[in-house]
Amino acid sequence: MSNINRRMMLCGLASAPFILRSNFSRAADKPFVIGAVLPKTGLASQYGDFVSAGLTVGISQVNAAGGILGRQVQLLVRDDATNPGRALLAAKELVSEQRVDFLYPGVISGTTMAVLPFTTANKIVTLSNGASPQIGDAAKFPYSFQLADLATKRIAPMAAAMKRLGGTKVGILVSTNPPQVALGDGLAAELPQTYGLPVVGYKQHSGDAKDLTPQLQSLREAGADIIAFSTVAREGVRVVMLGLQTLGWKAKVVGEPAALYGDLTEQVPSAVHDQFFAVNYRIGTQLKTSSPARDQLIGELRKVGPIQNLAISSVARDVVHLFAWTCKTSQAKTGGIGAEALKATLESIGTSDLPSDVSLVMGNPNFSSETHTTGNADYRNLWGLVRVSKPVDGAYEGEALPL
Image (cartoon, rainbow, N blue to C red; front, side, top):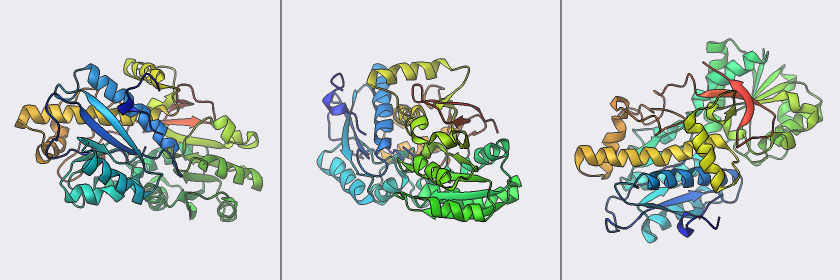
């Protein structure tokens, strides 16, 4: 960390918004300061590390290309302790007291949504990596945009994965975080009707649950032979797989990006190694080939430190680049980067020639005035299916999962 500017200190993603102050307090030759509210501690503290690495690299790349409208960018971090109340207080402190030019107010959807009423009331544009569909609700939060896969868009790849793995009767097990509930509800509704997969049970649990054996036993008794699983907890994968081991149950588990953390060969007991799989961003999946942009990103993330989760770091990197592009485009089209100008630029992005190096993961998010989510983005080539493995540069062994 000694080679990183003190104001770009590393901090410990699915939401990562930027907030634009309507009146910049710094002279044009002073740096833009991005304030970031991240979980350095608490239930989802792993995300702080993932996102801070991506933000740091994104800022470094933008600075190397001349900064934002000719001004260099710096980073200032606060810990939200994975707590919505702490997130809101930190966001207000960064905006009102530190007078940052931009704010990244969270990596977990629940903490971000605690901040959005504040930013909405003050007409502050936000750009988020959170998976909850509510973050991109243009009617409720007209200045909030979402650069992440929607939680409900994980239904199709999870269905494809469960079919590929031979699942015939699905048990759903999700934590009570907003995107996990949205995914669980969507799976329960769509798997039988759209994908021909019967759902025999649906259980929710607190994010800090230390034992999921009772929920798993209930799903087993209901006849499930495969589990759709989602959580943001650091120990989530370990807890669910320990439950399977305790029950001696040979059902397979299919997780999703939010559940992935660290060395899966250490988290998953050896007796159930062959039972855990997860849908992941393809950029975070070890495939036979890799793109030059991905290779460059990996090289730059290595300079920051060991890459813990390439997928989440990548979308955080993309937020920085998309915001820089939005400022540049808005300035060129309107002569300014006020909230209304940025909002209009983002809402017209679907008709823009977005450079391919801006959004490596999602591509063009295709926002519109009706939806500020990525519901209209092209998801067909976004996914991979990973298995228990040691991550290499934050990517897990697996295969492409085309839709």
